[in-house]
Length: 104
Image 1 (cartoon, one colour):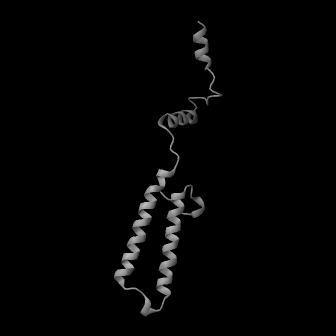
Image 2 (cartoon, rainbow, N blue to C red):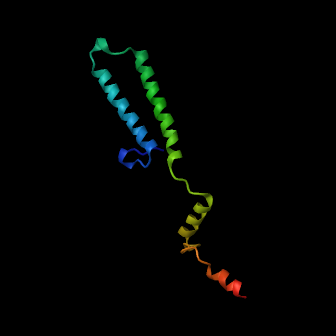
Image 3 (cartoon, rainbow, N blue to C red):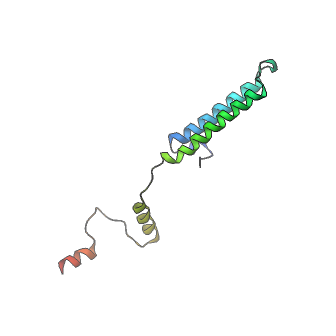
C-alpha cells in the first residue's frame, strides 16, 4: 500500500509513484487546456490514461520490495519482547540461567 501523502513516503519506489501521478495530472490538465482543434482524440487519451495507469500499478507493486524486511526470528523476538515474555539481550553476554547451569 502506497501512502496517501508524498511526505509519508519511506522509499524511492513510493516517491516514484507520486511523481508519476503528479506527471499525469499535469499532462492531463495541459492536454485539456489546449485549444479544441489541438486536443488528441478519445483513442489517444485512452492510451495515455492506460499507460500511466499501468506504470503506477507496476511501481506501486514494487514499493513493498524496497522496505527493510525483518527475519522470522527477528519478528518472533520482537513479538516476545512486546508481550513481555523475553527481555532484550544486552551486549550478547551469557544468560544467567545458562551460566548457573554451566557451574554445576
